[in-house]
Length: 237
Length: 237
DNA sequence: GGAAATCTGTCGGGTACCCGACGGAGACAT
DNA sequence: ATGTCTCCGTCGGGTACCCGACAGATTTCC
Image (cartoon, rainbow over all chains, first blue to last red; front, side):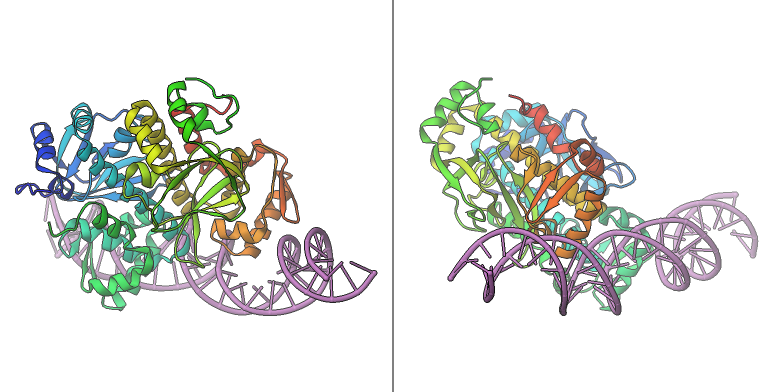
């Protein structure tokens, strides 16, 4: 393990130095604009993106009834599933949910790198494993937890990937992510705000009490995060 | 592509002959008894299982509140995710949901085979991709579809893996799988039975009108199945 | 055969969330 | 300041499903 100082993507930071050296010449900085689509459903993928800041949502379902099944920020890479597993495309849409920037790499360059290095391939497959667990937990939370709880989970996952304590999201947008309607989000936010865990302003939510939020999220939060730490490394690196 | 005549597992049937030859000496027939646990949460995995008949549920969540996130029958292999991706264990429980039999293989033998053959590795990774899509669709269905619809989806997935038109399940068990309580299942079954799509007896459900069931399932059913056909092959082989 | 266990149908009260709608309130431009 | 736009709070009626409970039906055991 080694650390690449100027890079903020945790997956790249946890690369062995030789693997990072393999990727580095092909990495191209790109801007991640709000709502920008990185991967469209069923279209061939030409590049992967390692987010450095901001994050990306994976959503599925027919338009108008979409729902989020995963979230990728600087702990991961966007596009690894179809490229490393199979088929070069996916039925799920991937778009920028919080603006930022990232490092992109062409599919062929990445594939060449993973074929040359087992350790790099293993790292990326490990990330895919954590993403699967995240999706599974989403399925679980959607079924067995109330909106308050799921909202707490989402805020925590969001904060993990943004670093700061203030998130820029509207109730409308949260409703789409959580698959409920806007006015239900308003009520859920008031509930959590009433417990002094967050403070809500127009278009922004500030996390006041993270441990309290984790308690509110209960067992809907934490499993993929723990698995990430076990398989890849902790966030302090 | 080649066909292994005595084998009913579709993944093995879609193997190239050379890949099947690599696996075949290590395959051990095993019985799959109802509710038998194949993989326990967070315990090291020592074998994978290619089901020949019956199927296996993947469930997550704390005991008493578990819910199904995936289903593997003779189209797949149980244990591929942790073994091929990372870590040799998974937080999710895998247990036999419909009795039958299968072919097991030790983890080391399988790993040796996938390291020796790119095509075999690709086949198994493709299956993992379809499993991810299945879990994502489960998350979607749990959030956006009513119980009737999700039940129709489950019956279809079940029938795909069993072949016949009669399934042996109790309402109680369906409730656990679908994450609702038993009496709600009774009502949902009556609803579907009222439309002549199924016939329910004590402990058994018979599918009468599969196209009708597919219509009832709407867009909650079909995506992973289509992806399986695209990536691996159709069910007629 | 009868007893015991299991499974299924039903009911009544309760909660979470949907859905549409409307008015107020913060941000921004002119 | 004035209007415009977006976002937020709230309400009332409706539906899906929870939850516990109980009685009838079917199967299994003896």
